Structures are given as structure tokens and as C-alpha cells.
Amino acid sequence: MNIPAIPPEKLPALLAAMPKAELHMHVEGSLEPEMIFALAARNGVALPYPDVEALRRAYAFTDLQSFLDIYYAGASVLLKEQDFYDMAQAYLARAAADNVVRAEIFFDPQTHTARGVPTATVIRGLARACADAQARHGISAALILCFLRHLSEQEAFEALEDALPLREHFIGVGLDSSEVGHPPEKFARVFARCRELGFHIVAHAGEEGPPAYIWQALDVLKAERIDHGVQAVHDAALMRRLAAERVPLTVCPLSNQKLCVFPDLAQHNLKALLDAGLCATVNSDDPAYFGGYVNENFRAVFAATGMTAAHAWQLAANGFEASFADAGARRAWRERLDEVFERAADSQAK
Ligand code: HPA
Ligand code: ZN
Image 1 (cartoon, rainbow, N blue to C red):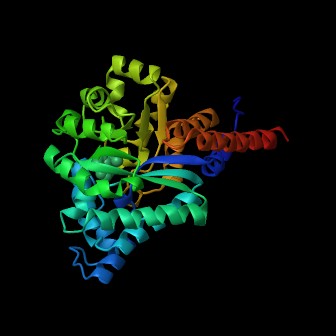
Image 2: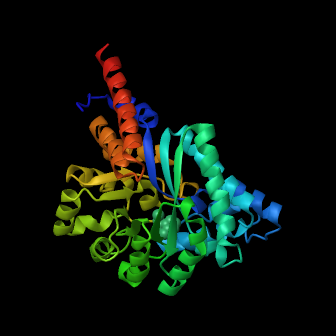
Image 3: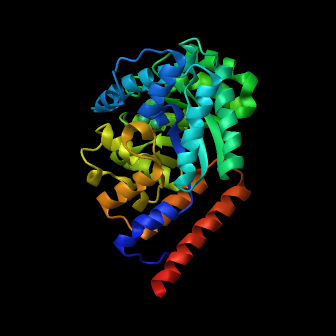
């Protein structure tokens, strides 16, 4: 569509109001410090921090691993089905308030089975929250099971086996945790099995790792989307392929800032990815840890990089293009997006 010029001071309201898909959010990364302490008390779990403020002060990350160490410690309070329900329910209410109409939510079953929590407990709690959110907020939500790449392929196969009795509750599989030293090809066979089973395939690649990991995610795992992918800019042939095939990148600006992937948000390459014709999207990754949900990611990256209303429309449209929802739903969300921009244009003309 023809995107109207919107004065910069009116852009934040438009960014907030536009309907959007969130395709890269780890539900364990939506655990706010207050909920960590509430669940710790409810479940009798001891935390190595005296209070919420002390925990928040520990959120000073220098790279991905420094974050993951605290993220896995935070998840240690999750024991019961109701805990997983409450966590996902809180995220989905926040997402709906940000005008997210579709959420594809990552979860890490191995983080929980390692503590003796059955996979079925995890999935039942999350799936019930997704179903209730559709009824309560009109938000469409689906789950994607992620394998932890710092563990072995054999352990990933075991996680898959554990989850298969509940396979109707998740639509795809992904790959997360410590990237460097754990290339996608390490998981070639388990992803081949997941493809045979009919799951959608995504993978984190090119967050801190090299462009070679993005090639492997595409060619070995057959990933349909790349999570992060921002290191692609260092490989011109890869950029051409991603643009030509419209492979979505689920970019997470505040995450990249907090984990020092870019020295400063002003240096973020989201605008360059869009201007090169890639299907980039904006997402919150681990919003409780990185300082904001999806609308705050949009607000901050636009303020830092000077993107325009045309970029905003493109990012939201890319989210619907990249979603695994059915074509009818994606078309309806795109129409709602266009209406929001048409209304903004009309009020500009007055
Ligand atoms: N990268 C890798 N693993 C993760 C992330 C991330 O950004 N968030 C939660 N697990
Ligand atoms: Zn992530």
C-alpha cells in the first residue's frame, strides 16, 4: 500500500496501535522478577537474591551466556502446571495490550525436565493459557518447542520423544541457548525427524554466531525462519539469498542492545536489513530481562535509527507474512494493518 508520511512525533502512537505478530519470544524470558519471587514463595524455592531489586540489579549482561546463566536460574521457580499457566497468561495479557494479534511462543522443556518437571506439566500449562487468551483477549497463540543447543543431539531426541504425546499442542521446533560452538549441523538428524513429523522449523542463528551458522540452519536444518540472523550482513551472498527467498529474520532490538551484539541501538542494522529487501520482523525475545515488550522494542529502535512509517508498515506486514498461521487469518490481520495506516493517512490529510 501507499504509506503516508507521518511526522516523527506521531510515529510512536502508530507503532503502538498497529496490529502485529510476535514470532520470537521465549516464555521463560517473560518471567518478571516479581513473579519469580511470588512463585519462589508459592513453591518453597530458595533464590540466591534477597529481593526483587537485587535480582534486577543482576541484569547487567555482557553477552548471551551472561544472560542465559541468570535466565535458567530464574526458571528454577517453575514447578507446577499452574506456574506455567500463570507465566504464559501474564505474557499474553501484556502482548494483547501491545496489539499483538498473533504470538508464536518458544518454550524450553529441557530447562524443566532437568529439574524433574515432566514435559506434560510444561506443555499443559502453556497450552491452556494459549487457549484461554484466544477467548479472553482475541489473541491467536501457538507454541514452538526449542531444543537447548548446549546439550547433545541425543538429549534433543529424548526431549522430542517426551513431547510427542502432546504434539497437537505445538506447531514447530526451534534451537536456542548458547550459540557459538554449537552449530546447527550438530542437530541435523533430530531436525530431519521433526520435518518428517510435519513440524515447522526455526532456529536461532547469527545472533553472536557467524553467517556460516545461518547457511547451516537453512541448508541442513531447512529452517523456515531464522531467529535473530543479524550477522547475515557480513555475507553478501547470504544477504542476496535471504532477500530472494524472503526468509524471515525475527530480529530483537533490545535483546541485541542488552547482550552487546551492537554497541548501541543507533548502530542496529534493522533498517539495513529492510532496505536490502529482507523479511525482517521486530520481537521482544526475553522481555522481562531486556527492558521491554514488543511495543517498547518498536519505539526504541525507531527512536534510535530514524526509521519511517513505511518501515513500520513493512515490519508489521512482514510479521504476518512470516507467521505460521493459516492464510485466511494472515490476510485478515494484514487488512487490519492497512486500515490502521489508512486512518493515520486520513487524519494527516485533515
Ligand atoms: N538466544 C539464545 N537462546 C536464548 C535466547 C536468545 O536470545 N533467549 C532465550 N534463550
Ligand atoms: Zn531468542
